[in-house]
Image 1 (spheres, rainbow, N blue to C red):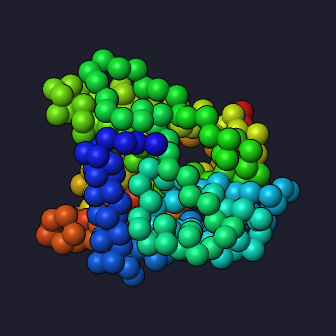
Image 2: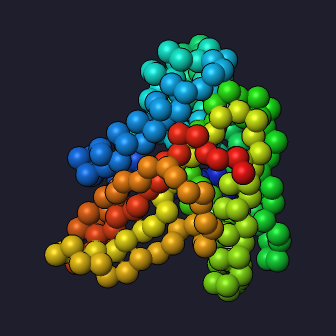
Image 3: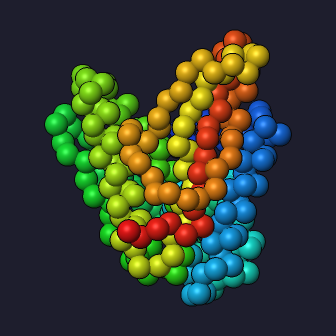
Length: 246
């Protein structure tokens, strides 16, 4: 849990930014949200245990089929570093939904120049869950810490190495969990011109290679005009209903 008000404010601002962008481009986002929920529901259908499910990076619940999770499990644990107030209210009114405030990077506060990427926290509610869902989170883990490191004068090489360590640690942690794991993450960011031509591509996982398999789809996250009048950004997303352990 983060107690530093400035860092917590940065995470809340990031969450609001996602929600506001969704409201501006609801139609463009809908296929991605539905594809995400479909992968989750496939994981639910094949999960043998029905005691608890933990959703990592639950955010504003845009991509969380909460009703279906409540129908399938006795307890739903929503894990996020900065739960929106509407989610806090909904959880307070839903007895079988629990909120867990946790910084899944394991940093838990301010970063410092030269620090090594930490391991994710040991969270019993996650470790003991029958199903763990890492939800459009993995590529976002480093955003706020890297912003801090940049303000501290760290080079791009240094910040990329730190970010890569966070991403690798998250994947390794997921694969060590005893329960079933569902992973949804963007694997490529594509910049296109107004005619649909590719201007450039970015690897959001800092060189991390994911296991074979899974299902892929496009997320039109920033249509023309959202970031600039002459290009748009799409994410290529991959979802695993059962992340390989090996």
